[in-house]
Amino acid sequence: MTVAAIDRAISMIELLASVPDAMELSEIAATIGLPTSAAHRTLATLMSRGWVIQDPANQTYALSLRMGLLAFRNLDARYIPDLAIEVLHKLAAKTQEFCRLAIAESGGLTWVARAQGARQGLRYDPDMGAEVVLHATANGKAWLSTLDEAEALKLAFAEGLGTLKGMGPNYITDVDAFREHLNSARHKGYATAVDEGEAGATALAVPFYCNETPGAPAAGTISVAGPTLRMRPARYAEISKELQVAAREMTAIWPLRIRQRDFTTGDPQASLAP
Image 1 (cartoon, rainbow, N blue to C red):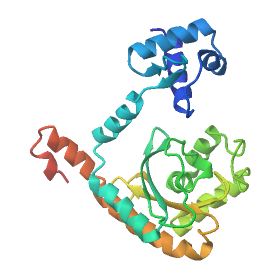
Image 2 (cartoon, rainbow, N blue to C red):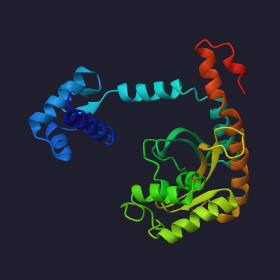
Image 3 (cartoon, helix red, strand yellow):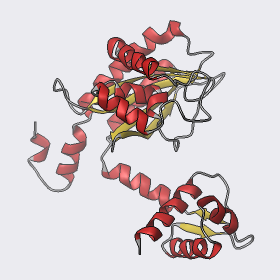
Image 4 (cartoon, helix red, strand yellow):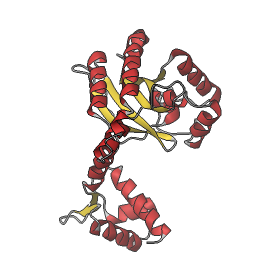
């Protein structure tokens, strides 16, 4: 398979993963910018490998469950322990809001777990498949605040600081304002995003670290989010306190991933590693 063919296949998978319904061949080809014949060949290849399915009734195409299965298999392979998920659920129960865990990887963050704490009234329940926009989310700013400022700004500019469409009314477009948000996150110990990534939603987030050694890199972030009408500044102190507790617990748990992986692959000494 050529590089161009691989690129077409990836683009097609990403397209089909982003829509709720099956798509027609002509629609897929037009969206990706391919001739219909080339799009059909790529779809045929993806179908033969089990990535795409075709509805026999209307001949439309959709992703199979293979993508989801591989995603869960990948998370299992990373040995995110059940204890980490318990920390998230405990945080959701205490705050009674929507909580998420994101892992730092390849210059960005990826959502890996969530827990809904709201039991009545308005509920914030975003799509877990959405990308973490570093400069417009509390999680992103919490993680960027742990980096050197030059590196943080580089990552923010790379994803389009101030230029993205469809964001909330408070979306940051000025680099100085963004730097102030990062400085505030460093000073307070938590980052906020109020109607930034999307209208009507507010989130607070803190980083957690690879281990408890001073200066250890951030492994990811934990956040609490909810409707802006309910997530008022008067709650920030209480919520940030619970976030810090959860972050310390997650930092203590995180090294268990490596120990568990080594132990399950047959190294009897690995579980004793410092």
